[in-house]
Image (cartoon, rainbow, N blue to C red; front, top):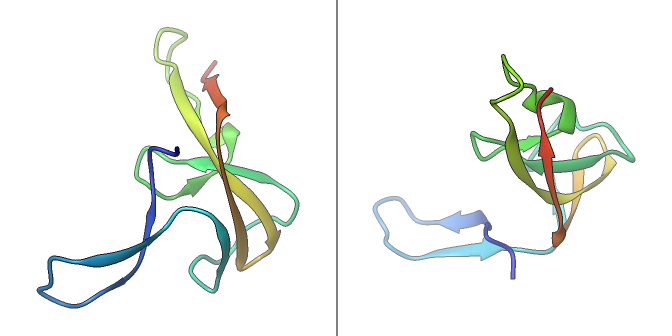
Length: 89
């Protein structure tokens, strides 16, 4: 089970929402690079592995796979606990 989800619907002031954890996300994100695997960023946004470099070798991050971009505005959410990666050189 992934440790994240993307809120795709929520009413203003409401306490309930609809969360998507897999499948196609179309027109929620822009500027994605087709064919690249994205990970959950430290700010909750889709990020590439090279976006996680730390200022020193001791500052490494464990990141979880979010999915693969199919187009500049299409992300196929494919959560995987097998793709938790340690990055930051």
